[in-house]
Image (cartoon, rainbow over all chains, first blue to last red; front, side, top):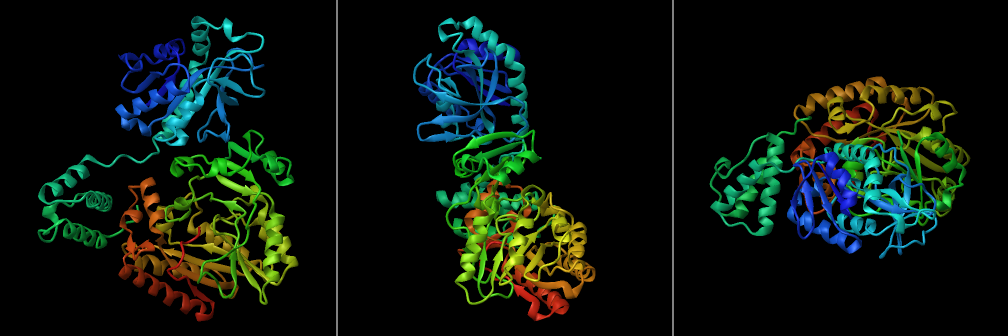
Length: 270
Length: 335
C-alpha cells in the first residue's frame, strides 16, 4: 500500500492510469484509490499540500504506517527536462531537512527549494517546486520519516521556461518516470512491512470485557491494554476476567492480579 | 553494506572521511552541516532504519570523555567512557541503545586525535591510572575495517601506559589486535551469552562459538581478555543453559589471560523500555520485563537473583573474587 500526493491532475493522470485507480471523492480534494494504492490531488502550494494530507490522515488514520510519496514536477536551472530525482535535502530558512533513505534507490539525489509562487528565477544547485516542504513538514508528524519521500521530475529550466509547460507536457514527463516511481514505492512498501503488526482485535475485545465489568479510568485502561498485550505475547492466549484467580473487586485489583499473572509466566527464547 | 553516507561539511576533506568514502565508492554521498540534523530528528523509526542504516561522518565537539556511571568498572577507581561511534552493527533486543537514540544510523566521529587529547587531559588530573571504556555506545571492534579506530587507539595507548583501555565487543574482527604486540594496559572484553540467548536476542552478532574462537586467538597472542556476562538473561531451564555455557567458556579460554569478569542483569530505564517495546511489541523478553522500582525495568527480583547468584558462583570458582566485578543495578548495559 502507498499514498501518492500530487499537486495537479496532469501530474496525477499517469499514476492513475498505471495503478488503475478509481476516483472516490471529489471534494475537498480529489481522492483516488484501488483498495491498495491511494492518490490525493492536493492543488498547488504548501498550504494545499499540508491541508490535503492532514485531511486524508484524519479520514484514514491507518495510513500512518504506509509509505507517502510526493510526486510532481519541478524546475531547475540546468537539469534536462524529464530527469527524475529523489529529493535528498529540503532547503528551509532555518537549515536543511534530510529525508531518511533506508531502501535501495537508484534515482540520483537532488536538493529541493519550495517557494510560495511560480518562479523562473532558478536557485543555484537545487530544484524548485511549491509543495515539497509543505508535504514533508505535515506528513512527518504522523508518518515515520523512513516512509516519507519525494520524487521530482524536471519540467522546466533556463532554456525551457515555465511558461512553456502545459498539462499535456506535464503528463508526458511524469508518464516517462512512472516506472521508477512505482519501483521506489515498492521498496518502501517492503520496508513498511517491517513495522510491527497492530494489536490484535482479540486483545481489544478482551480489554472491553474488563471494562464492561468494572470501571477503569483512562490511565487504568491504558495499563490494562498494555498488560493484556504482554500476556498475549508471552502466552499466545488471553487473560479475561474469568481467568484471574478470583473475581477482582475493582480495576486496581484487576490490574494487580494481571501483573502477578504475567510475572509468573515463563520467558521462552524465540 | 553502507549505501548512504552523510558527511559533515567540516570533515569532508578529513583523511579518515576520505578513506571511508574510498571504501564505499558506490555509496550515495550527501553533505550536511551537522550530524544532528540527521541523527536527532523526531519521528524516526529505529526498527525501520536498522534494515539499512546510513553512515554519518562527523566531528565530535564538546565533551568527549565522560565519567562512567557509578559502580561501572573492572578494578579501577576512576572510570570514563568515550564514543567515537554511535550505534552498533548488531541488533540485540536487550540493548539500551535502541531506546536512547532516535536513529539507527551509524555516526562515526573522525577526529580521533581530539578524543586522545581529552583522554590525556583527563589523565593529567588523576593521581592514578584511569580506565577508559570505548564500547559503551557502540561495539569497539565490529566496524574496525571501516573505522580503523582500534589501530590508531592502540598506538596512542602504547605511548600512554598510565591510562587503561577496555575494548568491548561481540565481533570477530580481531585482526588489528593479532597483528601487533599486546599491550598490558588494554583489555579486550567480549560480551558473551549462551547460544539459545544469543540466537534469540543478539541478531546479526556472531555465534558464541565464533566469539570464543576469536577471543581465544586474542588471548593466546598475549592480550588480557575480559569476559562480560551482561546482561544475564533469565529463561526457562536457565540453570542448565547457563551451567553448560559457563563450562564451555571457562574450558575454552586460558584462565591466566582472563583479566576480569563482570556480570549484570537485564535492565532498562522505564522510558527506554517503553520506547523499545513500541518498536518490538511482540518480543517476549520485553513483554516479560517488569518495573523494578522507579528507575529500572527488568526481570522479577527472584528470577534475577537466582541467575546472578548462579553466575557469581561459577565465575568465582573459575577466576576467584579478585577478578570478579559484578555490575550493580545502576546503569543500562552496553552492547
